[in-house]
Image (cartoon, rainbow, N blue to C red; front, side):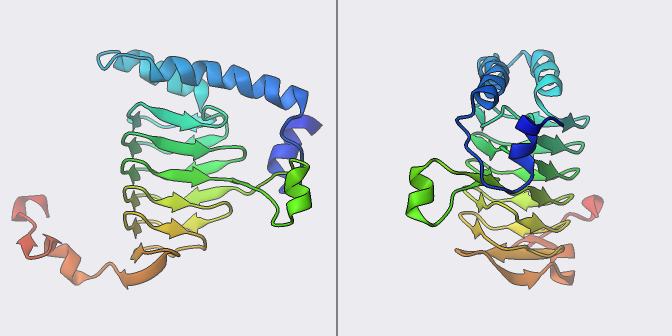
Length: 204
């Protein structure tokens, strides 16, 4: 990793207007532009573009356009069978890791970039980045916001509209602003999929 790229990933303050960073970023955004203009039947073209755009993308991943990413997915690591509905926004100024079989509902934002609280530093254009980790088999509800530096454990459900500012453990349902654990995934969830609606036996 050269010193220019290192600025993105070491958690220190830096200036994103750096000429070389901006050049690299624009090249990534060219492929993102192409992806968002694919037609619905061009699935193979989408898969090929994602393999070029992402740092890592497993088999069976699907991202519904429009898809937005600061670096076009260059710092994004998806496991296999990850699904993202419309308007996934990944502020991927540093690394975002997503485990197998995780699902994103519409309008989810995952952000790695932050700016200092001190106004004088923001005026100078300073930025810092912190990686985000999302586990396997998670469900991120519509409109959720996941903030820099957060980790979400395996199998966890994040409720729609939640603002995730702190780590969330595995095997829980968490909701709210700020997002908090509401309950653990329980025996009840093994019998009912929604309120009093039972899971069909053939699916168990």
